Length: 401
Image (tube, rainbow, N blue to C red; front, side):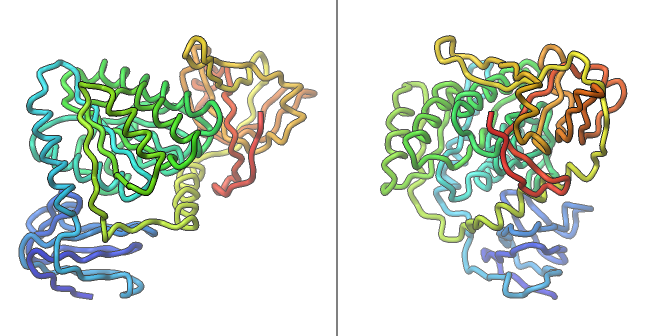
């Protein structure tokens, strides 16, 4: 179908759909699309269970391929509200003022309300200003760069619209889609390590944008977020504020203790934000798993002296520790199809996989992964996750260690 959009109006389109820009100029999350540009600069694919706002900078004509026209909604204004625009300008000003050699850490926090969308919008506008920086995704359940159950960081080399626009440079395996128990401390320390490693490589970086999950509304959620903020120590903390959430007020109070931190509260409700329901989140998570797992195969390797381990947190030392799990204890548990990280002797991740079978009698392990022979020889540890999956990415249960 052909759709005309007036200047300063927005068309909200839910995927799956494809849009070609025939005339005019539009903006999506701060990225400009026009017919004069080539390739992905004049067309846009919207994934399932996702809505993109296409804002007309001038009168525009779009060619839209969509299965259900009810998934189109014309809005007579810009759905990116003025608060977001103000936040973006403040971030740009703070980066320009930064006289330190360290990139500014900019974290976005809230229950939901479009944290990742705001990060895309800020990132794309920072690129327009000529800044360089990175993206840290700490949301275990809805990763943009790689696989759920992992944490990832990568350089923002181009405008970000979909997950295909940014790649992970370093990945930390957690093995869960939720920071339960001591994972809430492990996630924070792992993210700090990712940032430190990123800064060593990207010495001239101007910023690091930090996405977070929406776990807040419990006492454990408050402990988790406070520990994360204290550990990461963001220079700018952007919070989707909600007066009705007491836990959020506690987090804001703790975050405001730092005199060097700029706290920015978004109080205006985003009327056009589309909140995915549980089924849509589950579908997206399964799709992410399936995309990675489809390239895997069954591989048998010798058991030899490979150690099975889990990560834990030592509160006294304030550090992540490894605990070895005896193979005889492990095989008594429902370990089949649990997600794992194959690691070197010094705990560097080689590949992700699924653990199928441990055969003590024949001294081998049957895995589902895609490592090569050279990588196989480097495998000395298997870090156990808690999530059990089918080879199609469907949830099968949990491994409780």
